[in-house]
Image (cartoon, rainbow over all chains, first blue to last red; front, side):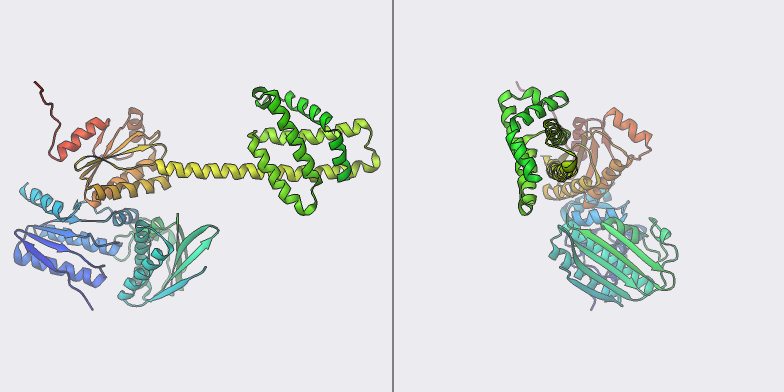
Length: 120
Length: 133
Length: 276
């Protein structure tokens, strides 16, 4: 039983909202799906909303970090939105800083930030 | 009070099962959202270590009490290869699997007590406890 | 022997207390005798004497109970613990001196007398120390809670801008609490910039700096920006001397300057209005 995460396109951006706890397979499948979608749509930006996610371990963090770097290679900027306080704290305590990641409070802010980044 | 439950870690899906169990137990003890996330993440790291390095093993989750303190203890045990250099795996950024190298030192930071017993060639038992503040 | 001593004390209580008081007054360290009125001293001294006698005459079953009552009572006087211990010691000494002078002590009963005295005073000492440490423990815990309550609430100042003033020493436990409040506040108030004001933090060492850096990192993850304001000259000095790297975040000396920058970051500015 594997769920696929839906990826929506809005003008130049892709919008992804992760609604369920990520297991390893889903996370890896998502990585492939997103890159494939970037390829076919030539989108310039991605907003990845994690609001419902209540924990991220080092594996998922690595997958997310990889996705962001890979998207960057394909010419797309990624903004992560909605990281919960508890998740942020655990990530920091785990020692995962996600240093070059652009973040925003929620989807709306994320889209704004992405548009601004794309203008620069 | 000594409620315990456990999950055998054999497939990747068992990692998910272990952390779901952990989250429920943490909620049951009365931990807040941040501590729930800490515990769930720690269990995920431990379970994944078992899956990656030992192949199979067990995650046991116990509600414990010591005096007025309530807590949740997570015991990860396996009969895998053991850890050759414990000091090394407790260093930040050390990894043999291509991961982020946050695993064990990260778990130690997330939890309050952390103990590791390992015999090279025979297996590893890691116990980590979070106390309810 | 217990009874004998008790009867003796009861009979000579005035004399004993007078002498005990004189002895206590000799030690000028404690201010009890200096600041209290004679009347208060008198009643307290009498009460103390009665307490002593009742603790001596209690039967074995009720002794523990009496002992507890006694120490609770003593703690209530508000004396310093050294003073209380000296008071107990002096009291037994006075009795010994009195009884010896009076000649009711001789070689045959001397040993058992000392025994009774020891068996009486030692548990009293212990129980008093116990009671005091319990009170202290309670105070420490209460203060800890008070400190936690005091610590760190996030104040929304403008739309998108919040301030968290930090006051007092930051230890690991408090740092965790601060981080939680900070992040939850950021999300709740939808703050895009938070100013962490450390004007009230007396010392910033590597540990505190580490916690602040972590908090700022976590704030970045939830999607806001953290600025460190209120850096006093001596704090700047220690930060650089310790080799702490804060270049990753914006720091300013005052909250005011920080606020201006925060407004700029959110595309706003404070302008003066000409009222004519």
